[in-house]
Length: 110
Length: 118
Image (cartoon, rainbow over all chains, first blue to last red):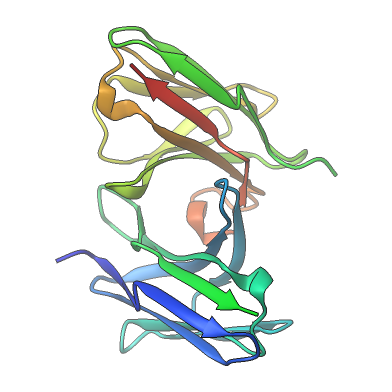
């Protein structure tokens, strides 16, 4: 079982839809990141969370430490949101400190 | 402020050769991390440097090494290249305000170096 799992693996939405991507992890963490990767490889860090909720524009990220779960929400989705969204965690007291989820590929159709 | 830069952007090598990749962090950032991304394994953490010292290391063989210079620029080296080393190699920098925070800070990623091993 992977330490970090994401769902769904792929997601197709119509422009304007509300989108939720989920991340669950099985070990104790000190921080969780949501990353966005566009075709071509460039990665942008969207959020870093250790508790609660953060909002930036149309993006909202939440984390529930007790349930070991985080969600990334996109409101009023747009075709430019099409990308791979990756959840990454810093695991404490573990040989491989930083572990990435497999990513969720999002396509937003006009 | 200039972003994270990586050189070269593309590289073709043959099995058995070695390669050195370079990463220049954002000015003022003291922490540099390296990652490997392949279609099969996804993103994996290689190592992290802070103030010229390796602070964390992922599960990669000793063929993968790195270093950081006093100006925070970092290099990673892969010796005796294998076909499976073909990947996108990304570096990311962060402020490193608190030693040991590591991935507890926002990471700023470079565009990556795409390595093809033939």
